[in-house]
Length: 287
Ligand code: PXG
Image (cartoon, rainbow, N blue to C red; front, side, top):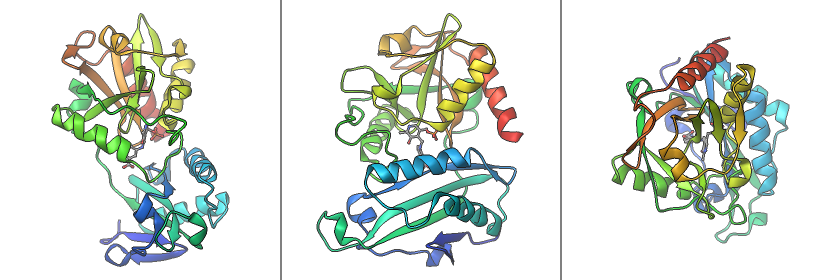
């Protein structure tokens, strides 16, 4: 990787200290925009097509017209990886509504900004992947799907950040969020899975969650390994009595959870199905 990351903004590359956009951008003023988080393994963006598709779906949902087409976005991302000579890392494409006048009206923003950052990310300390992590249920519920739909990966992450703050307050690096019905939704930046009697369970999309790309990959790997998968409404009780629990996310990959709300989950260490799926995932990303 070159000494200073080169950041893509609207087709041009800038050194990190010079990569700037307007303070009138509604992405900053109102969180009006969308983003993605993608991993680079061995110089290749993992599940790039899926991430770009989700980015464009998020944009469509908020009626934001991305100034470049999907194939151009794919190319811009690959070019930014190449120019940064990046073998392993993290990509952050962002599309903002652009600079406008003060006031919410998106019609006042004529110039959406396309930003691509290629850098590194570490979510959790490496030892937690071996020992398992502790999570806590927080009071802040996940956004109601009829308010800001969690399926939109928007620049409005306050719902998740508030949950993260509460988790940290409780001494946990990740926070379990319930939905408006009191069911398990997801964590602040990760999807959640449980194992009970050999069956893999995860909340359905209509629980009000982000349709995680790692989540979908893990479901596919489990099915391939002939593990039964159920997308089904779950409660905290299901977490407490689970045999195994783990979280999934592009940055986090697959991380075991061994404690929730001071209850030890299963044997209190990463379980066999979690370990099997982690191995399968690591193999897949290195292919
Ligand atoms: N749920 C939420 C709310 C997320 O934001 C996931 C689940 C996992 O989705 P993927 O598609 O990555 O399997 C996410 C992921 C970051 C960052 O800084 C990104 C996320 C979460 C936390 C940090 O890039 N998104």
